Image (tube, rainbow, N blue to C red):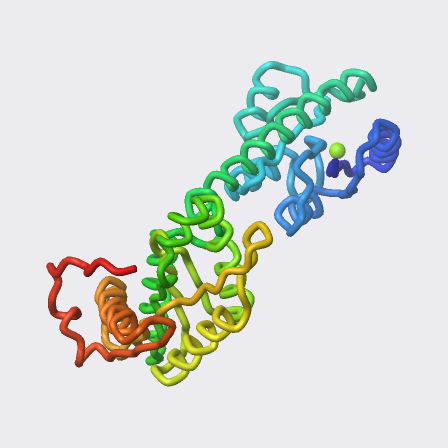
Length: 319
Ligand SMILES: [Mg+2]
């Protein structure tokens, strides 16, 4: 673990450094308060710090206050080194946001134990932050395909729509649905169905531009968001995805399955549209693709869509 030590006294600094290195810490050195603040506020900052109280530039407590004002994550655990040992002064140090203090000249073993306590706090907090990150990630992810889930891809579409609206660009939207997917589940079982979904999701994802996004919208439905795409480009991309699926069978437990999908394409018209409206129009185009024999691409613009104005219309069942 990386530890910052700050002391304006060279002898004290040398003592600190050799002790901490002996205990296995990676040591970052600051010779005054300004240097300490620069190290703690910079990128990849140490999360554990031992600060001398009296230093030119900024004192230990002043550095402490500035670090606390940043209120950054991960937390910085700060130990003040002080020759002041009266209650009111140590209280002042703690008030400034220090977590602990050690009286100078420091006793080796005492400092070692207090650093260990600080390290324990930082390690625990790192675990908590990781767990929170993982929860956040899980909340946005479809755990079968590892793609963004329905609400996450809707959010992405909303963000892209407002961004492109500001910049006067259009956003392509594709809604696609695997053909006769129910048959896979009915004849080969749900595990086979899961394999098909994972495989197709992977194939779609690997055939898109890096800034395009795809999410699992429903059971066997996927929503694709194409920033800066007009209708022609979006339709072309849908055709590309269709053929990537159509050209190569999916293998499920050694069985070769021909999986196809139908695609509905639309594009934002640059006006202020809600994601719901665009998804509804793409859905209407998808319905047409299903009706005209499946394994094909249909597109529709908002002006020609019945669904765009039909807010209460129930989605049609399809397979
Ligand atoms: Mg000093």
